[in-house]
Length: 453
Ligand SMILES: [Zn+2]
Image (cartoon, rainbow, N blue to C red; front, side, top):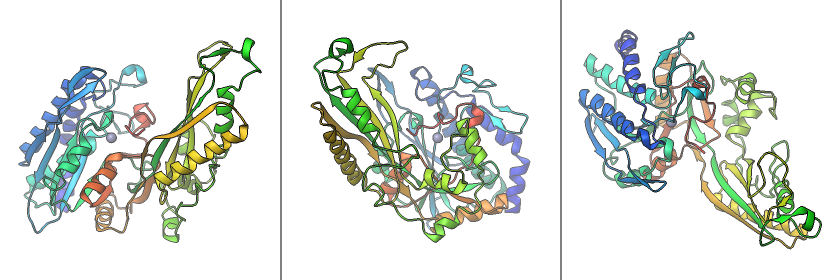
């Protein structure tokens, strides 16, 4: 271990140079103009892995239909380092594509040029999400190889180039390779989220699910003029606002009866994990840009983000939203809202409750309009066990390097690939973030840098 840590310290500049080369490739998956760069990035990784003696394969994912245009999907890079049957095999997932970035978006420096700022941070698109973490693993392999040290586990890599654009083709590949390339995998490790704060590493063991709903209210055949029809017809927008206002109260309490019935109680062990977290309420203020937080305590705030359900209203399709005054009565409006779900809520049951409640509340209005409420997509929550050997090993490793016990955290959003690996491989999945909590905001694009919806 000593030897390894010494090597890491001594080769810091080399690691930064490797990251500089990766950041310089603008592998933006969401913009067709950059698609060749995404391919170039996959080639960069293949070369790096091969140079370290890994056996590398790529999987072609075929074509993508991008608004009528046919685009080649970037390949999945699969690599294996070591195949000793007496060792455990860890599968590392990461992605080599990035979100778009323009200097006009608020960057202080050119986004695809890695810069070392005055606070000793490395700034550049993808440095933390997710090129840095992917290269982190490659650096570990390199250090062992150079020192002639044996890795304690076999490593397999699964690196994709479409994460920021819906991971097209990934799920099918994971299920397809579950009994082939991933056959001997004992546990999975994903480094694609962040520490909670800026000083202490964490292990993440839970994510909320999300169920998205549309509530459509239909009335007259076409839009009407309020000067002619105002006061004479049931207006869809009035009905919609009335029902939407009954979904959640201003303090975040969901008003759908029965919605909290399946929410798991906080156990004494879980309660303890909130004791010494690296988080201050001021960090929430910084993130939201003011002080409109509902709860004053860190504990309550994080529990509401990580382990309690929430309901958010997102928008109304068909409503007049341009500047100025317009006296239209919209003929049909669709309200959009979603619920973040937690253990042990079942998406199917939640949808039944939501649909029934909306229809009941609508019926109370006595309106002659028509309502339709439906779930457009749902994804389950994910919860792992911090007692699993995969987590125990990670906690030990973090403590060895950082000299501090990692926080145990969960996240309020979803990282769909986590569930895919767990369900397809039926193995423990660990989220081991490498980036600090402020890595997102120092790229000036708070909250928009991840693919999670
Ligand atoms: Zn990412």
